[in-house]
Image (cartoon, rainbow, N blue to C red; front, side, top):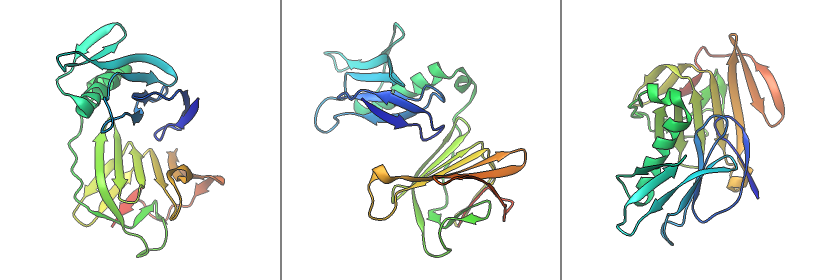
Length: 225
């Protein structure tokens, strides 16, 4: 048995290793992990886990048609291989979170290529020392997620007042900010985390050393430039 921590809400789940499986967080209902033998073998059958509970699977028939079987319902998927697993993920998200049905995915194209980061004026490192290069981003379900070249991840829950320009990204307000990175020379098992949570106009910073009230040095939740 292994454990996994949700990168979105910090919920801990226990699971068993399989050849192909994806895990959804039982608390926030987002997909938090996917493992398959793509490149080495078939990606199906792929078990669907809600925490430690198996709730369904993706299978393929002899006509190479991919199907999602969940809660006694069978849904024929339009895509194949890894794309079929992504298609199944969207269906499962909508099933697990009814509110998701009421929200349209926001089309968001990151204009900035990256930069130096600060949160409420609290800088990550020294200005000019680090350029965090953006590799991917997604914005849906009231959550903006940005991935970076060196394995860093920025998650912003409830972002408001987004200024999206070529040389800067500004988020004026946010409910929660989660920043994670891998220190130089370390493996993914040594991921470091910082989070900022806004409560009643105050911002609380949480690290591995504990939680503290942050003295805001900037009115903006996130600045990358």
